[in-house]
Structures are given as C-alpha cells and as structure tokens.
Amino acid sequence: MHTAMDALGQSETFLDFQESLSKIAPIDRPVLLIGERGTGKELAATRMHYLSRRWQGPFAALNCAALAPSLIEPELFGYEKGAFTGAAERRPGRFEAADGGTLLLDEIGNIPPEVQAKILRVVEYGVFERVGSTRPVEVDVRIIGATNADLCAMAAKGRFQADLLDRLAFDVLFLPPLRARRGDIRLLAEHFAGRMALELDRGEHPVFSAGALRALERHAWPGNIRELKNVVERAVYRTAGATVRDIVFDPFDSPYDAATPSDRPKPAEAAPHAAPNAAAPAFKDRPFKEAVAQLEIQLLRHALAATRYNQKKAAQRLGLTYDQLRGQMRKHKTALT
Image (cartoon, rainbow, N blue to C red; front, side, top):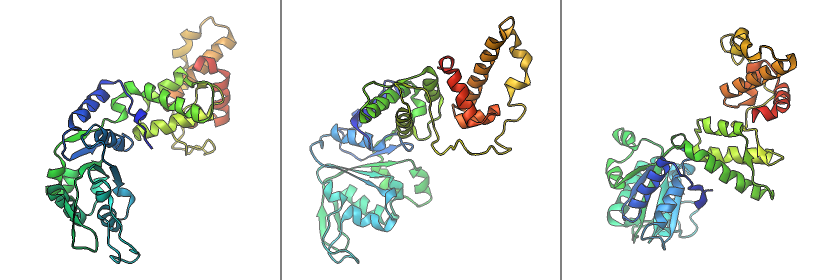
C-alpha cells in the first residue's frame, strides 16, 4: 500500500511529472496514466483526486487485472437481486460508490470489450444500468485509467474500443520508471529504511554503507519503487546493527544452489586470474600479507560489481562457496564499505 510520503523525489524527471499531474488535476476530464509496474499509478491517481475540485467526494479504485473478466461488469455497475446465481440482494457497483468523486480503473486494458461499451456510455452521458435491470442510474464520476499496456496497439487489433480510448485520452501522463530518476534512489531508500526501523522498534535510523548505496544506485529496478521498498525493508530487517551493508535483490536466489557449467565463469570472465601481471605493480615492494589482502579486496570488489552485488553469483564467479565469500567479506568489511 502506498502512502503520500512515498511520492518523494527531487530529480528533475520526478518534479516535471508532478508538475504535469498538478496541472491536469483541476481539469474535470478523464486522464490516462501509463507506467510500468511499481511506478505508483494508484498513488498518482489519488493525488490527482485530492488536487481536483472533487477532493471532498469519494475516491474509488478497481484493479481490473485482479478479477475474472465475467466479474468486472457487476463489480463496476452493480447488480439487482436475482440477476445471476448468488445475487441474493441488490448491490451497488464502483461507479455508484464513486458518484461525485473519482474512479480509478487500474489495468484498464483487461476490461472486456462489451464492458468497455458500457463505460463509454458513462463517460459520454453519465448513465448506466445495473446488471439485471433496465432502469438507468445517473452518476457524476471522473474516470482515471491506468495501465502498462499499449492501448493504441490494442485498439488497432480491436481489443480496445477506439471510441473509448479517444474519450479517456483527454490527457495522457507517463510515470517515469525509477531508472529514469536515479537521483531519487537514495532519498527513497533512506525513507523506506527509516520507516522499517520504526516498525521494528529500533532506536537508530539505518544508514547505508557506500557499497550498499552503489548497489542500489546501479540496479536496473524492473519493479521500480515497489521493488526498491521491498529490497530496502528486507535489508534493514536482516541487519543487526545500524549500518546496512548487504543488499539482496533476489530473495529466491538460494545460496545452496550448485553452480551449473553455464553459471561458472568462463576463462575470459575470470579477469583477475587471467592477467596476474597487470596487478603486479600495485603490490610491488609490499609485505606479502598486505599484498595478498589487497588482492583479495580487489577481487571481491570486481566480482560484486560485475554481479550487481549478487553474493551467490559473485561466489560462483570467484570459485568460492557462498560461506567462503561471506567469510572474505567479513574479513575485509571495512575496506569494502
């Protein structure tokens, strides 16, 4: 669940989007929000509602991807008693719940074509019939559609009504993915870390080591803000002290999986072993133990960076077990942070 505080950012990309959202919010027309998963489409729709003239009215939302296609129509428009098996009494739908306010249709591309026709009638005339009834119901609702699908391509294939798309696309806002606003990653990470520490009743606000921050800032974030939140919260709860050092991006990445031949580093990948002479000048005239320690640190840094701080893959790259890698990281903890 998003909170208003999750709408954090100071990057130019983020601020430009917020400016566009604030500009369209008071205009009482349908809007489409296009964004990847985890970019905060529902949060943006909620903010748009509260910046509009409808802010004192209800805000209702329906995730159309969470329902079977046959259930979307009764969920949106309601139904009369006896309309179908199990309809024991009249039940209003989301349009009636949002009367006088805003209705967010999340994953709007999942709505069946026959239901799209009924939505078009609401957009144009503000009227519909409940399932099992012929009596018109009037509503005053602003519709915000949200999706990651290509609605234009769907319309071209006949899977989305072109007339409805035209009516909904009074304006289209594209939510920036997290990779396009890397300047906000640290701010968001510190926010999520602090909130998790509060939930765990920890007295100290967590801080990220330099290595942990580099890992966060270099990650591709296919799941965007939702993924960042999960990664940070997991890291905080797994950290005993105040400094977060270990970042696990994939919770399904077992440390016990044996490396397959395809996973093992190829000779060309094992650069630290392939060209020992290249590193020799850095260790010239150093005491043996100090030179070995420095080489170990360089190998660890290289492997961790090459695997985006995936410790299992870094261990495989170095020809170590997961426990051996963890032991080396503890040994050189100060140098790696």
